[in-house]
Amino acid sequence: MKNINRIISVRSPKSPIAEAYRSIRTSIEFSNLDKELKVINITSSAQNEGKSTVIANLAVSFANLDKKVLIMEGDLRNPSVHRMFNISNIEGITDILLGNKSFTECVHCTGVRNLHVLTCGAVPPNPSEMLSSKKIKEFVESLRDYYDYVFIDAPPIGIVTDAGIISSYTDGCIFVVGSGEAEIEMAKVSKERLEKVGANILGVVLNKFEVNSHYNYYNYYYEQDAKSRGRGRGKNK
Image (cartoon, rainbow, N blue to C red; front, side, top):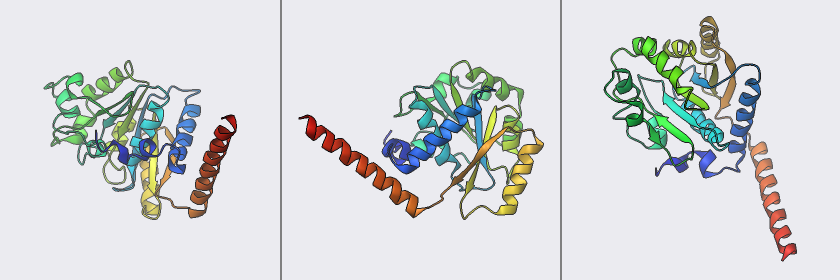
């Protein structure tokens, strides 16, 4: 899977951004104390706020804990998960729901141990109806027996209601906000829509936020840490 290295948690696991995803992972684990959180959907208020990037890095972070993780495409209007992993989107969730293919025929392994991806397949003419069907709810429920975590990449809640539908049968929802891109009023409306359907909002991820001073600090920290390890190895020779 040649493009897996585009995901920073794979390409640069000691980077500040990868560390930020591990912090989000820890927050999710702590949220798991009182209620089991296995199926989590991720949405935003608008397109291009970085949902697919966030979901890919979070999934890698959990898989690195030796957890069995599935990323499932939930945007049946404009699927993008397959592009993150450079895999085929010819067959996927729509084929399973229509009874044309089995799950094992559609699920993809990745270059990351314990991480699988289920793409969309053919874009259906009735995505909302398919996402609210009894069949998909039963399918998602069945995934709990095979995976420790299932992350569903949902469409932007500010544009269509699909994410609200998905939130009705998931354990939690993460709301992604693109720094400097999201409209404040649209973000508020999106949050209200999630609350209206009873979504368990686990938190908000502020994506694309650049703080050069922090970045330089963490770079300095890792560089000094690496130098210290190098000096330590020299002393032990």
